[in-house]
Length: 466
Image (cartoon, rainbow, N blue to C red):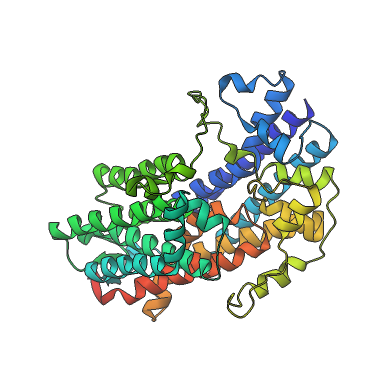
């Protein structure tokens, strides 16, 4: 019962801190972001502890994490798991306390009190055109792998992820900037002329059709590739920014459009990502495909997704198998990751690889590592505390930038300040399941590239009298 006690006490404390953060900020993105972090940090602990304390009958209701015990390592309710829960709870609570401390010290000029506010205006055609162009550039980098997938009867996802070449990183970057700014631009377009921070240069209906066609085209491409995180990241950012940018005349229809335009493809990507769709359509290479029958999933199997457990189990693995400390080696990996693969093809080992090798994990699939576990591998318990403070401080800094966006004269800095909190929250699912090395893609793919694309699409800046 000590496991449930740790989970209960930490939940009550985190709920109190979440309430305080909401009262201090009134920002929805804090609520969503904290839920996402809790989901990948401690929610799996509730399911695992209750399932094991009641006789591991979870398979009857759709729990299916048991395969990890064969391909990763067996997990038991023991001292290592108890300490894992304590360290996770400590990480989450310290991160929340850090956020609360810094946002309470923020001087927040009210936009409503400004006599006038400069509103950034985006060009619809530029956003649509640039994002569609990025798809073609992305395809150029993987053209040979597409042909290989067709000829061998394999799924494009398996070929591109299982056999990445030196251009794979560039291919992924163009995928991200194809969908991210496009959904942000669409969210701004749906706000019409009521955008508080950003608006588009026209609200004509023809642009709605162009946005829908472009979004469907990009999503279809991402679906064939099996790329979920780009769509998930962009969907969160687009929906959150619509809610922030249009506060007085929000339309339920627009919110539903943004929600379903992302959630429905995400559901189908999980189903089709392992299928050789291109080969089947072209009737080529399908003789190499083996049939793998699967059992019908439980109604609740989608709710008890293994997403809750893969990263969650990592702290247990680190403690139970006494994974050696790396003493800050992840910072060296982080710095080297900024060097292009054309110059440095072989990367230093990151925290996840060190963890997977140390616990003897099977190489059948990837398991991810929790952010707190990676910090522990580097510096022990001190690393867990330090990682929580850094994460909380960066998130609070985005909030402070957004609240003081009018203080900057540069359109680029204003744009970055306005959307940085939403970009940060959208990137949480990636960052929380990676080590210290995850701050590089956060800086480049999460922040810099979307802002650059949006900045290139800025048509003009207008003054809006309030």
